[in-house]
Image (cartoon, chains in turn green, orange):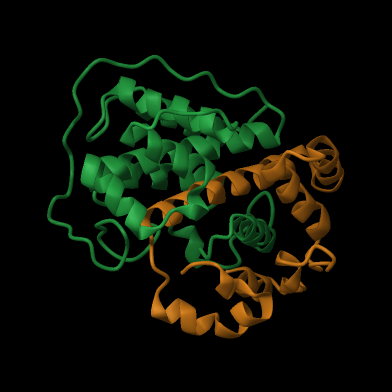
Length: 195
Length: 108
């Protein structure tokens, strides 16, 4: 039902979801995903800080403000908050495609054993954005947790365009670039997201 | 990027359609594309919107459209969660367009 490139991208994301991340175990990442799905459907979720962050990024990202991020980060740290945001954002992408095409949501994977990798760029400091990042760009927004930044790039190409392709406004594809940008603009407008 | 890509590919565009559903975006299949986005994000009349789009673009085109929606659901969350700032250059480049479409009401 899905083209091979997209199916492979989703399978890759499920592999990442099932493995330990930088600050969360695999089971904790899956709990984040479960909370995100529950919040999306309007169900009540835990007020524990990791799950609270997962629910807000899933259901009401446009209501997130800097003070709230600072509050969550004071409890769990910026790297863990960024990991949660990355997991939820990519899960939302996968689920959105399935819902839009009337396909059954992918069952969440089984967690792999192991401890968090601890791969964090602790040289970064908060400057322009609300979390520490390499540069003020959506490409680098998750850069304090390099694996999350890489995972985002791995999804972007199959879903939309690779970062390199984005520089070409006439980039061909199954649908023309202008149609892709119309979809992008409307999606962001509905989400009241300036990006 | 919408305006740049329309100009680069010589595709007509009325960008006001992004924020005003009454306006035809002029881009080929623009109306069914916008209806599909609205339906995919709201869940309302989704089957109808998907069928209308598939009639114009085929299943592969509809899948490609769904994937772009998914990508921007992802990117919007990353931007909102991180407070990613919009660069001064981008703000300067888009000043006229932002005013025309009323986009400055969104946080940046």
